[in-house]
Image (cartoon, rainbow, N blue to C red; front, side, top):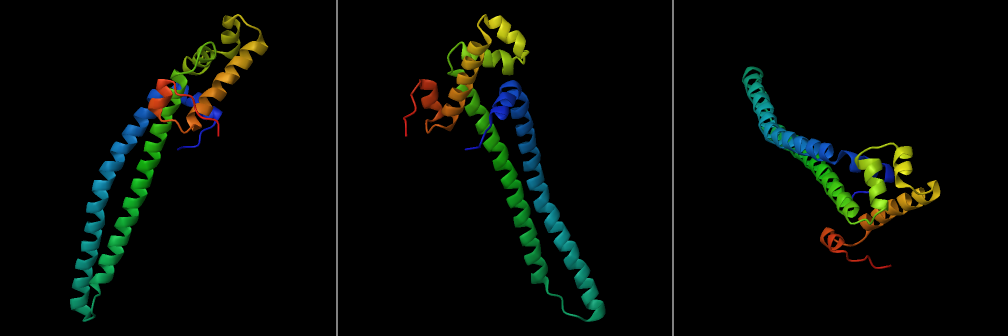
Length: 172
């Protein structure tokens, strides 16, 4: 599970669509690059082999084609691993965004409403506090408790389905 911070949660609440859309676009580009990388690495290796073959016949030296193919295979494997790692990072972020929103969706008012006004609708703190009709201390306490509850649910062992169903995390 991706580690999150309160500033990250605030960002996710206000930018869910943009984060998910950017992640999907990046995954699409990575898939395309995966397909291109395979072809490009092979092409470079074959060009190198052809060049070595022509220079071998001229100079009379023996070329070790297996070394070229082994290097090509290692380069290709490293590229694939790098691309897969980046895809996993993006998928982990998407999973974190979805879990944050699931946790947010089950919060109770007024704390949920305060978080929504502040971070989803991106209203000014003072405006939301004034609209709440409660004291600064009460407003801050409820806002803070809602954020702590969201974080607690996020890090709980509950599945997303259990969070939606209202299962309470066990104290351990």
